[in-house]
Length: 344
Ligand code: 5AD
Ligand code: FES
Image (tube, rainbow, N blue to C red; front, side, top):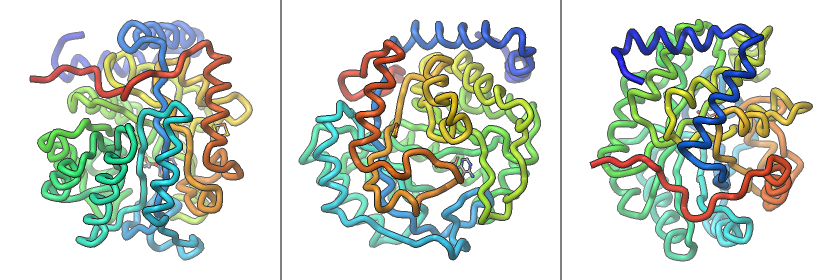
């Protein structure tokens, strides 16, 4: 695909506007492009939500600092390592360490040491997803062995971004992504689908921004209003046409053929009766992120309501996903599942 950004935005918008009768063909095209570029394997990246302590006030997020109903926790390093050591048995190639945003020198040092230990004691690739930091901190984590980083830009509309994030600007967020690339990490970002106030043009620009940033990984998922946030009762922009969530992923794949795209958990929350994540794997995605957080913490890491697997324990989702992939006829990815992009 070639052309100026304006041409591309128009092409993306046209595809996003595919009428319901044409959507199966769109899904099939995305699935074909996924197969041709990424193969049939599905990489498993086990996510450990190791702390819900957060200093930010993102309007959509259930663990935002002002939500006093949340019981705050921090997993101990040894507890995290115990999970990491079991991951290879479950065919995971990557551990994703995610937490709320808690930027302090002590916490940043601790995260670095944890990464070092995981790299020394397991064959796992390590992905961090802990928010905005300075380039120096990212460089330190990279020296400790961090392979990848996930930090969604959430929306490409600077005004909407500012409304949703009292503690951060879109410019700062994009600077973080640039810094991560500069220190040599594989970079993942992405956006909320249907945040209140977004238009179809915003969605098209979100997809275009993923392409412009040349991302290694792209995670997107539907916005789900959380009752204990300022956006409680603000419906998803596509609430009357929820198949648009899948249309968004398919168009994302078509315009980002070589990115790793996970079937994100929020799809199971919205389409519990239709196995949302399995559908996403058939419509462009090639990565699954089983939840490996110990059961006792899961109820305290509800970024949005109806999150699936809250009653399951470490290891359960990993078993479940093997069955799900079997039914889809998709093998588990072997090896670390690093980016397939070649950059000089
Ligand atoms: N609905 C959907 N996704 C959410 N996230 C946070 N809160 C919500 C919500 N209410 C997503 C954000 C964040 C990721 C970790 O979880 O996109 O980047
Ligand atoms: Fe968690 Fe199925 S993915 S139980």
